[in-house]
Length: 252
Ligand code: ADP
Ligand code: MG
Image (cartoon, rainbow, N blue to C red; front, side, top):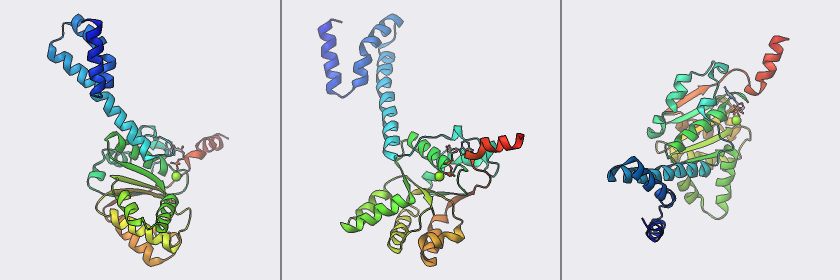
């Protein structure tokens, strides 16, 4: 192949927005000649390279858009430290059937037991399956909805939050909500009810949610919708952050 012909080919690949094929085509042609590949095998390899690159990029974009505070994985989670959790049940969630069935997951427990870690890890898995995911703390979400009241964009905001396959709401309970925020939170949960999954983490047992939402009726209505079709995990035990201290104390 002449240099000019190669340049023209590369230009065409650029026009067609196939940058990765453009990058590897020269090498792949040499390889095909050397390995005596069939036309079909050559073309398949070339196209697959582009598909793989685009898939990886789309996963990276999904992870970026989800705005996780950090990245963690299920594989990094040490189940032996948290015997109140059944590894098999969590790994089953990692298969993502719950998202397709539009079920919720609730992690309840004291600080440091891995609630956020598990929520992010499941979120990352969902991104890998190229689902749309968003991560918020409960107070960020309540503030975001509250701010939408000013320009009357609440319906649009609620609609856009309903388009995610998975909405992660972290740290419910650290900040009590006022009446308006509690009402907006209720609207969000109602809108997603049976239409999209929520993973929620909280340090508050259900019977104290009225303190978070400032009134028993709002809290009962929210719990009702969240808990119906949900997987609830009460994580007991020690904070993982104290792991090394516990070890030191044990050996003292
Ligand atoms: P929580 O949200 O329950 O307060 P985090 O998920 O933030 O706790 O966990 C605190 C820290 O400990 C994080 O860095 C997390 O990755 C780590 N961690 C917690 N539990 C485990 C565990 N069982 N195995 C590995 N790392 C853990
Ligand atoms: Mg947390």
